[in-house]
Image 1 (tube, rainbow, N blue to C red):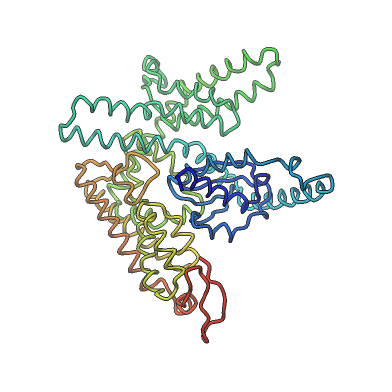
Image 2 (image 1 turned 90 degrees about the vertical axis):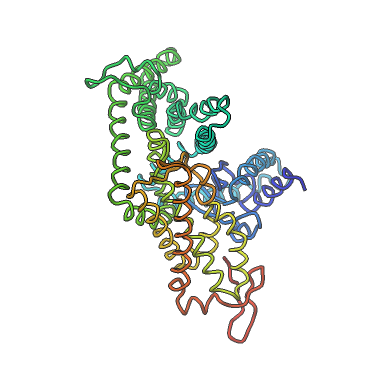
Length: 500
């Protein structure tokens, strides 16, 4: 079977289990997850979906998220979208007819009620804001990764003195996107907040325009890029509100001329004479705070950040860190926070290895661990989180302990003056090695990060092996199971299913 056929088969297997094409309101994907907007949540067959070999887990948030893993999700999503587009509408389906209409309406009403209830429970203003921030920055991650790896390769070649005729070209490739990232942030922000995307990009472009160096604001000369992504975000949000105000008051006959002009003019003036200065000060404060924290309390800060990151991911609060990462990359060339946070994944891997040894008779869980560990080593933690540690409970806590010790290890070296950073956001685990950068040379940086991973693995393993299982938990899960998850009957155990 070709790769295209395999991806098409995965999409075809998923579609009926999420209610069919008529139940799909929207389709998108991030680094590892297929994100679906569903019309009727009750039509989803969760257990059958989780049982698919290609599905690593599911997560329910504002969208229904199916974890397929990096690379796979980017290839399956277009096939899934094609299947949804090709599917006949209910009116074209032979089985549908006038008699089916009331039933369809009833199902749609039930689905809308379920969706509304779930949204009302989770859609706090703060979480909705974080989701919007994620929607703005997540589409930029592939470019950040690609440019970050090229930047690392270029730095290595420069240090070695190799290919001097090529390194300027690599530097241009690596720096071009970062030089204009404010424009992309402005474009995505306006799109996310319901404005005209290109107007958001146009206003944000002012921030990186070299000509701003001729402008004085607040008694100082502006510099191109001042305020960075934070200024671009604020400028684009302002542009959206100005545009919506114009749409209400400008006559339709003049709208095409007046609205874009006033949007760029008003938002642009506020950006130049206000937002660039304010956002620049905020960005500078973020950079100074990160440096101070790691220089003066690096071990403690790393311990807390590494230990709390998995719970932050579970709550969706990690999205608030995306603009901070991006700001640090703009300022310093790398973010010192990501290598510390990546230790949470190391603790998760160590915990999974301990679970594997503690449950020698549970073939189902051990099979899940074997299939998920390669992704875990590469920094994709969802399979281990949702398939192993979180369902078991206590191993999730001990995995956080492993992440804390790994984060403390990296933070300790920051206190000693050896900063470790990442030139892009997104990957972690072993996949972060090509993106590492620091202030003491690549060899030292790699050694510290590798030491943190080993510390996280070891601490997560030890904490889980000795403290991750109560007597009751062992009795419940350390039982003979078949590979499909069915518990083998014995006099001491009632027949039931062990699902992970």
